[in-house]
Length: 238
Ligand code: IPE
Ligand code: IPE
Ligand code: MG
Image (cartoon, rainbow, N blue to C red; front, side):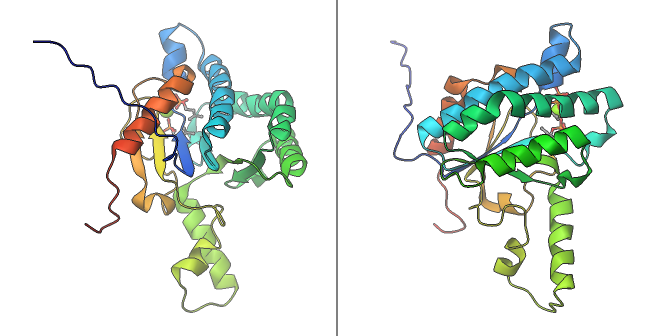
């Protein structure tokens, strides 16, 4: 019997408009190499650079990445401060190129309480790219889906509303103006959302990838999108 290989090709006419990514597995990747966890976060940053570029090349319009959750503060202080130092480094090394590529950076999450130098970098990235019209690049920092929902409710209460629509509610989310993610990719092999885009993920396709985030490259990205394209999205219909 001949062995038949199925070769899927990415359909360039069916690229998801909004891709969201849970960039997980940095720590395990480092541990397997006998390195500190922060080393994994540093390598993860390099992976992110390539994935942002490739999103643009593929024609993705919105890319949302989970960089730091409201629960990640539970980690040792050295790791948390290491992650925010890397954010400063990322902005310093990437902002020019992001800007040249017309990428608009947007932060989702409560970044008001992050370390001062990281806050300055965030402000600079937002200010520099605010008029760009290309890829919308949402970085989730101190983001939690539940915190986002409660924040939206409080905003509506402040406005004195006693009854609201889904549209009213969505207008108070950090992702206001972005379509819901078509696909959420999670690296690192875990089958959970970990408080990511709790409201917005209602009809997102979930693609779990076994490789750790630092290993995730454009060809694995395309393979994940091929899995997305093979799905039949019914939205409750037939
Ligand atoms: C994801 O990688 C990055 C952040 C949560 C900041 P992890 O640090 O969670 O890596 P693992 O899951 O422990 O391998
Ligand atoms: C999710 O990964 C958060 C980010 C990738 C920033 P975690 O590693 O924090 O998630 P859990 O703890 O495995 O659920
Ligand atoms: Mg993890």
